[in-house]
Image (cartoon, rainbow, N blue to C red; front, side):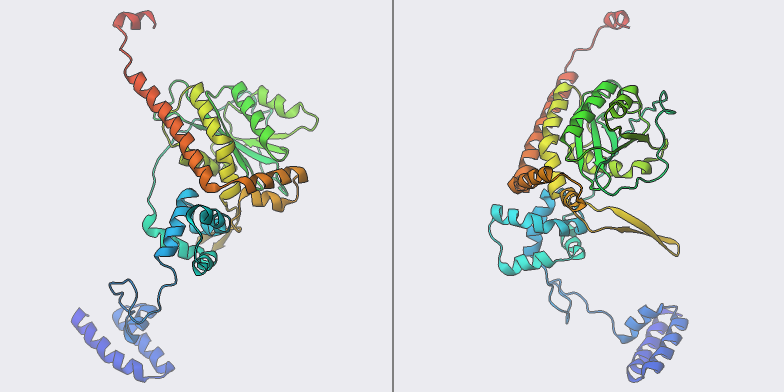
Length: 404
């Protein structure tokens, strides 16, 4: 059927459609779907009149006025950028914590605006911030080098932990190697608690076994709970006697397990934190030397850890539902690691009171400013080191032959 013929048929059908009852409209819809090849919902729109066309103001003719506008977008954008650009669901959960600090810094909001921001949905937040979003790309290199000596002594975790509280840790390392794995460069150790998502990081100048063990001890000393289980990948920085002795030779030994080779989902929680807590912060450039590692640690602890654990909500995967041929992932309510720690009921009261006091003394906007300044110091040092390395005079062929 040509377009002209279809238009003539539809014009006659519209006149009949409006005069018929429910059963008559249903039969007419069946005819139009069979004749024109339309889906039923589209046929209803065509016969009943198309949707209103948006005018220049962005408001549909005859439609209701939008509830949220530029005032809400301006506030949300400032908080969204300061909170490391979370999705709408996590930003909606963060707003009650961030809004009081926003008003202290930028002035008191009108009562109606504050009320609208407190009740705004995650979907509305995503729609308002859609023009502000930008796609970021990047790809790192895998630095896992298998450790084979202790594979039989360190068991594979073949099932999920029966986690009822904090203390079960997943650990991994991130390579700051840039485009090449040659030579020595900095690494970041990431340790994530499965139950609360409490995450702490520590930088080392190289991936030596003793350096990684010392970094794990430093992180453990700062954790607000005891380690009950420790799970890693198969990298040589973890599968060694230094770490086996560290966890086994203590009054209450810690279960030390490893994931299956080449199965990153076995440590999915810490792998995700490698992106949000390390790559999003320092990127994919090459970082070298003890000085840079010290600057990174000055950035990580306490400022970056406090910012992430106290003010950035996270979501935990609960289950996956299969509907036909599709899989739907179900997540729990977004909450910060600190909120999850309080809700667990398995943290010492004195430790929890100290954390609560720390939380009340913090301002996320001020923390973000400190983080940006310390990150700039790391990047300035690395740019200066790279420029000096490029200006080194090339060695002569005699030197190359002698030092070979």
